[in-house]
Length: 593
Image (cartoon, rainbow, N blue to C red; front, side, top):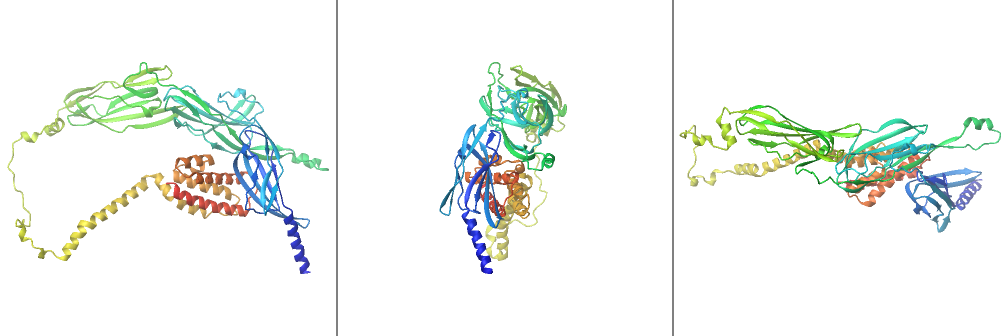
């Protein structure tokens, strides 16, 4: 009887081993440029393989992530082993493309799958006009990017506006690719805002953010595209079963989610140079609308006593770059301090405040007048150079009660004019001075004296130097937040990795968060706000090797696909990802400085 059972089991496995094949399928064969295509490769009778499948026609798509799962089932005494590999693909262009066949070398056999015909249509195109009236009324979601002025002057404030419109419930919406603002100095205009807006009779939920941009140089500049990814609901008709009309009517349609990507078009701008006609020689670099105010900490002082002159520049525009003209203050010594700069967002604009402070030490007595200080700036609204000035300031300076103060200010020596006094001996050393060097014999210096002398001369400075270095290092670690985060990034990862359980339903999300938090700590930024594209760009700026950068990006996309694809991930894949996470962070620890 046992032999019969063993024989049956062996035959079952042999029959399952012969049932080897490969096939491909997609969630849809008709998509738009906004959609992500889920390509599923099913390996029948293959649980694992050392070779990756080769996909014909994949060059027409951009791969954004991958996920795999394995399963074993017994149907009518037949053991069925299969493995599914899911790819997330984004079309590169419109048209009709043939995807497949997929080929795989398996135990000396070349397996070939079927082919699929994919039709890619035009998605929503953001032309940067900001005109929502042109939106198709059947459109359920779209993005829109605009700038307030496509032909600004150098340094003129321009408002970049990003909006995401939707009238369906979306999940996990976020920027996958942030716009590139190269050639601009940028400032945030507050946090992301949410509101509602009615367009063509339809009510949309709108998520938006704004940035103030200031072009640095004249010429053609381009604001890069922005990509938003999200999961949107897709309704599918339930397959009707015979005799279940009432049940099917009650259950209705099947609702699943589909991942989409909305991409804006780059915005081209022509930045104008500031006009040379009428440009003052002491131009402040300010472009916008400004005011200047001056004040003294005290208007009455004595010769040699300092007072503080405060010049406050406020207004709308690039206040950060404003500089004062050369100020000649006769009768004063001037000690300028470092300017202090602050800004705040108000509505759709950035307003700034720059404070210049300088200590004034009067050199002459009497009523001293500080002439009005003029600030020249360019007003882009009037397209002219304009000027504002402070009021004249006065300070009454009285003679110093001590002529030493006058001597110090004027550079004279009062003591030289005073009568010289005879030097008095106030005291003598307790020990007599040995004037005869030959009386200092070596036999009075003991070995203990020599050791103490050596310690005082050599070891005390070394100990002082070591203590000084350690204190400096401790102070730097205390004050430099970025240095603190970089120093403890790996220890923080080791601590977090202990809580990563492979049987956790959210383990892939935690893998992704762990890696992004580590990268954020090493770069002193918010790691959880980074997308795979952001991570790739940030690591490239840190001169991290391209191989490691690509592997980190692909790892994050794999975790992302596993999290949002809706399918399960086998334990083998989870363990492999955990090992890969450890290797990536160890390599990053060596390369990210």
